[in-house]
Image 1 (cartoon, rainbow, N blue to C red):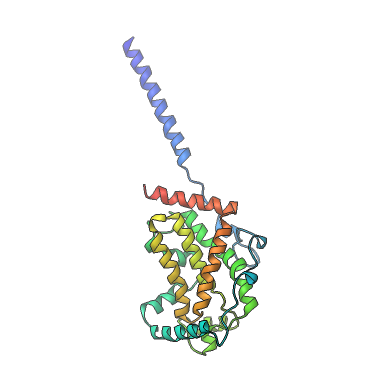
Image 2: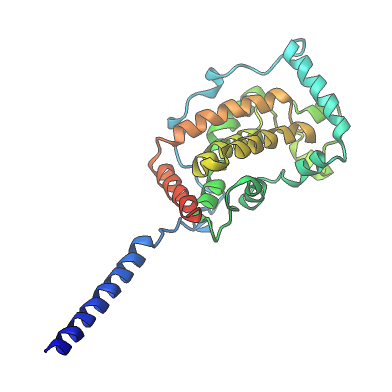
Length: 263
């Protein structure tokens, strides 16, 4: 009788353990982000914005015009540009060229050294997803309208000098505009979002975001005031995105990635 009872208890215990194991697997299974390639427009090859144009303010009405020729601020812009020419062939000059391309692989590699864990498509898919998606809102609704409205000449064009990039890249940008810097806006926006995802690394992340914008001054594509305005526009873009359900869900999952990695 006792032996039969013990066998019964053993069976019950095994059943309970199996149920707990399988239920645990279900709870811990992480939802994966949408496939980035499947989201790209068939016409432009670009990823979609999180929000719509109507969700953002009229930045032309909101921000100041770029500094005029005889202003103190423009004099400062020119002075900073001339001083940064002395940085040619230094490490910051090389970094400005290395990280100039806006794509998620490059930006993930740029921010990863100061993160608790590296950003990768495999190990932090939601964080990588946000790095990839954020540029669309930054460019479409944050900087493009201002650039096309003000049509500010880039510093290397103004001074007829070289940049840290290639001749082909210089020619491609010669007829585009500098105010504000999209790189600066994107770098700052990413820094704000990544510091939410990985708050333990906030100081290093914010510094990386600021440095990323300054790279464009060093490289010669932007005036310092372009970079400063980019940081302001970034704060508006990120604030707006927090009211977007799709962005908020992605941010929630990205935060969970870093919490789970730190356990």
